[in-house]
Length: 102
Image 1: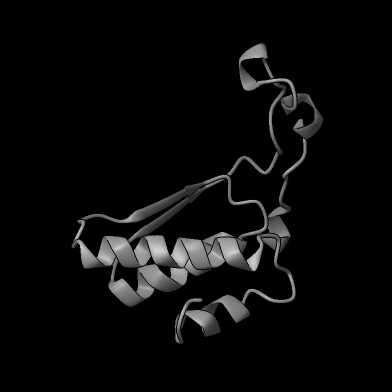
Image 2: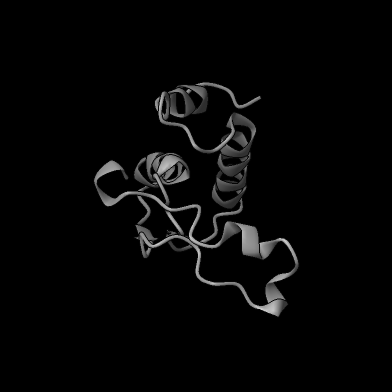
């Protein structure tokens, strides 16, 4: 379990949390690894949806003085192709955030 203050940052994502808590904790652990290894650069998220994981990444980016870039079409997932696999069709147009709620 992530120790405070990360735990408090994760709690800030309530009540509009789209991402399970354990995944937010995993994101925090990955960022801690980057910090420990002194990796240079900023963070980016592609596919922001409602901004739950982006809020955790932003919290860490601000704490570490790193830049964060967020990218989203706000159109959901595009039509699938055969290369996407058999289940991809059921996600077309889903995983879509709303600009005014992100």
